[in-house]
Length: 479
Image 1 (cartoon, helix red, strand yellow):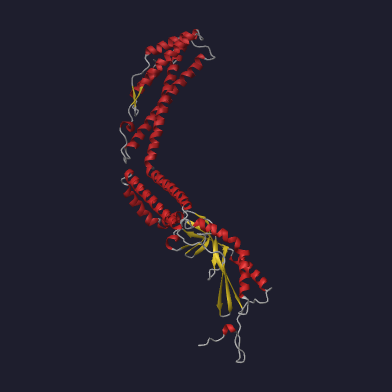
Image 2 (image 1 turned 180 degrees about the horizontal axis):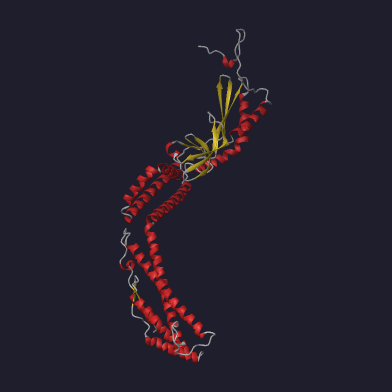
């Protein structure tokens, strides 16, 4: 071999690459001479199949010899398993593997440079320009003949193919080690996310089964007891499983939880309260989107429920709580408010509420006829809401222990100082108190105006002299 190949061989024999032992050159002078002889024959008979077959076989043998040239030592990650919680072995193995890949890349780059030089020499001396005479001395040439050049190119190509194959395998191993390191670094986070996802799945399953039980059991008391027992047992099993799993897989988690908990308690206590409040709202179904609620000083309709805030459209409540109307303003209530304040939900049992209207008739009015008229008006105007309210009530209270269903529209009659008071109690959709109330009042005034023996009372004073006796209803009682 010429001087250049001797220097390359010496370099490969003495190079210290992590994970690679460079043995003696696997391609002997005999192999190169044999290949050179075959290419000399091929130049004389370019299409001879026998010579082509012999060249292919010889290159296969040379490639096998080159593959033995590179012997890979066992990796630290394969030699000794990484102990749990040991963060030193895996990074060391990654550094060694990265050095190995770098060395292979440099070696492959050198082989490609050698091949390109040989191909450039072939283009210069054996291309379109007629070749020089065999044995011509040229300080810039690496070979003495065309067949020798072809043999060296073939050997360089086999070396490149072997190095590319080995490099691909080692790069895959490096990627695997890097991925393992990433998993080791973020393993606790992945485990926590897995626990959270499992817990959410259990909550969804528990709600589904509880809903099925609530629809199958018709008696309110048995239904209430069954759903409560099922929920309690389910979450007790989940809690035991969670504690067992966490402490078995992460024996040192108590220390981590203590440190994390202390930091969160100091720095993010308000955020943690908001998250806990959000979980409470979802778990206990304190309210959902569209509900009208009152929490402390916040009253409004829920339009958005996020991790930290509940968005409300503000509702103004009168002192008597008879009229509730939206003000047009938006409230952003922290979820932590449900932990320290009473939560009032107007939609828990249905989307309807009870409202009242009072009419006072004169004492001389035909109160029986007035009752019939008022009942007819209630049936016409509010009767359509009663069945819808009752259906919603029965559906939403299946998991609650309530013995009596709500009554429909009712009318109460009483004697007051100004006359006969008739109180209408009826069902209306939430937020429609004034609309429905105004409709009832208009209808009452219209129908009472057609009756001569019914009159609405107002504050009056009646004076009786001694010559006239009071009406029979107010005669003095004899003792």
